[in-house]
Length: 263
Image (cartoon, rainbow, N blue to C red; front, side, top):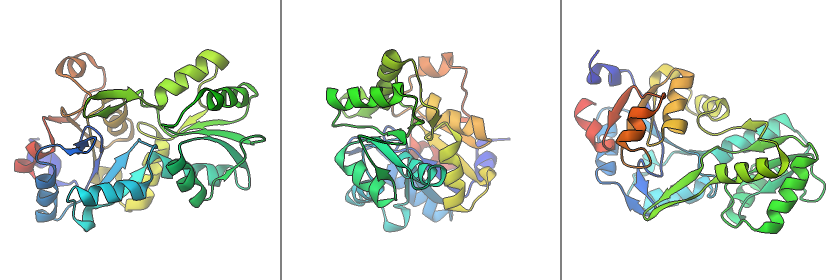
């Protein structure tokens, strides 16, 4: 089966954001052309990001500033998927929440009840306002044995100038102190965010393709859950990493725009 045939049944492309559609505040060349090609061929996309340091509304506004048409500003974050998970799994319970101000407001708006002193469970997001006091409280609650949920597993977050430590680094810190890893991680490549994606789109897994720049999150999501996985080499993954990794994408392109001739 050639590339065009493999893409022919895809109705919705699940697009990672950082390193796939843009880097920081800079669009990756050809990203808007890719969206135009989706429009021209009657397809849609859902921006699917593990980055829980920002709200979905923040990302929608950012996409608007970058020139993304309104009909393509569909965003699902690991934070949103995690909020749905904890409010259904721990109804009426309160969380110790490790998150920055913008994500804290979104979690509260999505129904997450917060009690930093006497929580029923621990919920951590990508906190870009992290300090030692927060880490101490987090480790205390984790060490006490409370249920421990994380939005996503990424170790680094790509930027225009390189990488900054992401929630995976926080998880490693907590494990070094407490001996525990999260009981549940919702974001890519785990099932929680896939379940929410299926609910939001109403599509079957066979009708979606997972597109991203990270092997251990984006590509592993497709591999783990029976979706076509498409690696773009515009972010974290190098040619050497792709060659040495046991996680193999279904297709590989340099950037999103390189897919256009096959749509």
